[in-house]
Image (tube, rainbow, N blue to C red; front, top):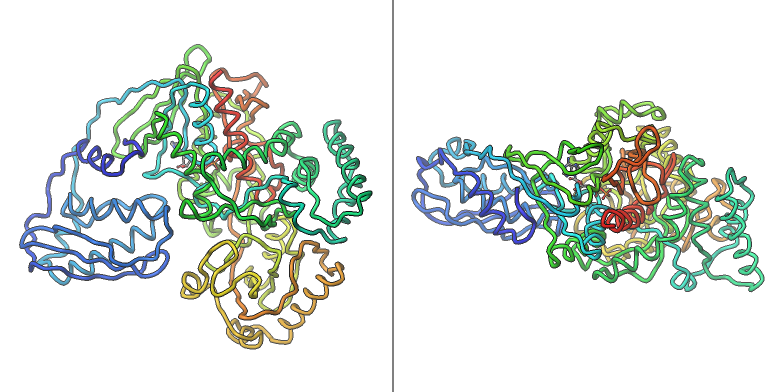
Length: 626
Ligand code: ADP
């Protein structure tokens, strides 16, 4: 267990908890500095390892192209640990597995040139671990340091509470840190600078034709009708948006399954959530875009000021918490909610070294442990809608997304809702350069478009599953990738072309050849796309477009459906209090973020997850502090 603050401090703490025995001190080296290379996540990692006659004395990472923020901890921790333990059998850093493996392979390659016995160096150092229980107390205890947990922590501190965040991984951020980049919020001031086509106007009119199945939904429709009448009376052409449109799209595109009261809160507080992050230091691109499955251009994109786009959804809060006395305990896995007379009063668990801990909560506990997309057993238990969700189906989630909070809450009687709804996304991985779709289209292996690319994620995934090999190519031109970089700052030429999942060509003909699809079909798909941009009449019903396609160079990236988000989870009320199976509040227990259910219904809009975690995380932090 260690705090996030001060990486060096954390290392000292780990090593003081454990005294290394059985160091590989019998290895003899030929003294000097040796270079080693190996493949990491983003490309080659090169290290220089310096050894004396009987010890590894220095390891420098001299070249690497790993994802900033996500890989930082591995690049710092692993060399320090190898030197400390004089062993290359050190633990991988969770959340940065490929970087860890690449780095270890590079160090091994260097040491192989000089060590008398590399096998000896590959022996794991046995550590003595204290079994004494660690006990601490705070007003508010938060489980999970993703966007929801950290937003809750900020608000709890602002409300005067002392806060301890418990995180099972070696680094903060969870899936939020890995997020593509989109955060939905109606933000008319920005959206008014963009234009809207008649096809998009038609989309809103069609939404208004859908039937409201309860009074709250009817009030959204009434508000939107008034707003749209005013827009049309203005003879306007700017991009329209409002919280009521956001609510109706969230609710109807989740098949009316969500709890409208929670949808109401989500959309009403979206812009405030964007501003909350801005106040903590996040910066945003001007352009408002449509993420895959967002169904509308209301996705805000952060700059890469915090290292990656996803980092802006969680590191601003982490900085605030650390600067204002909050404590983040890493490598600490919670497994039990502690009860006293029906009230939740704390959390128990174990550190990664096996030391038990108990964190007492004076005011309450917030569960913010994320979803269960990486837990194959759970997703198979609850899935009712996909033919296969076993281990053969990959996930976009980090390995930590195992639904722990759901299990812990259920064990004390919490109600679970919408568990059967598991989202697959067909556009993820090294062949995907941007989460935004305006200027891209999808073709199957025959070179043909097959779906409205601006549709819902469940529809897109279902359509991809019906294509040859359940794989598709995403086709882009210079409107998406210019001079090798996307509009949101991703380096496609540098980072994607060497992965085997992405290709670039100067002409469409060459592109068709390199990816092995008939050129005439690819050309027909381009013609169809452009015709749809011009006419607003797409054969698949797509309405979200930006520019006509055709400015080279051209790119293709291959991808297929992966488990992405779990819509179901713990049932909460408007105050994020956890509800028991009998509908009563469980005193002292709150939940926010992907661990909860009821906000997205059967299908989550692309870009709504970050809004969800920040909006409800903030509410949880405020409410638990009361
Ligand atoms: P959200 O988007 O809802 O905030 P994230 O996936 O971003 O969810 O973050 C959830 C965090 O909770 C992750 O960092 C994950 O490692 C952490 N977590 C999950 N289970 C536990 C647990 N049992 N104990 C401590 N932390 C946990």
